[in-house]
Image (cartoon, rainbow, N blue to C red; front, side):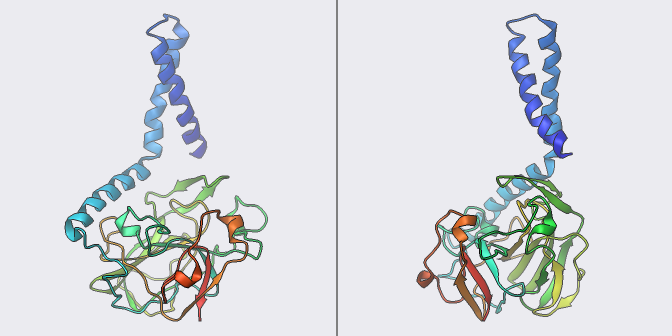
Length: 290
C-alpha cells in the first residue's frame, strides 16, 4: 500500500505533463503516458481517511467558533473541574504542547490547542535504540497508559495497526482516523480526555466501564498520524475529537526537569522553566509525578 501510494504521487505528474505535451505533439507515447494521470485518483483513494479527517477538523473549527466565539477556554478564564494526573508511569518528555500559543501543540485547531505529545528520551536525547523503523525500538512503545482521573469510558477505537516509520518525520498511516486507536473518557459533564495512538489490541477497557485514576487502560503505540511511537493526550469540552474545544490542563502533584540533550531531538525553542505556571507543562521537559 505504501509503495503504491508513493508511486501514485509521482506517476500522476508524468500523466499531467504528458497531457500538456499532447497539445503540442501528436506522438502516441505522450497520449499513452496521459493515462498516468489516473494515478491521482489512486492517491486520493489511499489518502482518503486523512482527507476526510482534515475536512472534519475544518468543520470543527467553525463549530467551536460558533459556540464559544472569542471566549474559548484558556488558563485565564477556565479552571479544571477535576484534578488530573499524568497518564503514564515514570518520566516522560513533553515534545509537543503548552498552554501558550508560541509553544502549543496545534493552536489553530481548537480541540488540540492544549494537547500534549509524550515520549521517553535517553540521556543522549534519543527516543529509540537500534533500528529506528521498528516500533519496538522506541523507549515508550508498549509502556502502560493510565487513566488520568476517575471517569466513564465513552468511546474506543482499536482497529488500526502501527504506522510505518520513515526518515525525516515521514510515516504511512494504516488507520482511518488521525488519532489511530484511542480512548475517550468522560470525567464530568464538561470535561473529556482523549488518549491516542494506542497500540492495537492493548486496550483493557470497554465503553461504559467506570475507571479510576491510575488504572492501566492501554499500551503506548504508533497508530494513526504518528511519526514515531508516542502518547497524544488532550482534555476537551465534549466527546467529539473534531468539534470540541480543547481545555487547558493543570496537573496535580507533578514535577518538571529539563530533558538532557533535548536540543538533539528537537531544535525548537523551549519555555524557560521559571515562566511555566504551577501545575502546567511545556515541551522540552521531563515530567513525572512528584
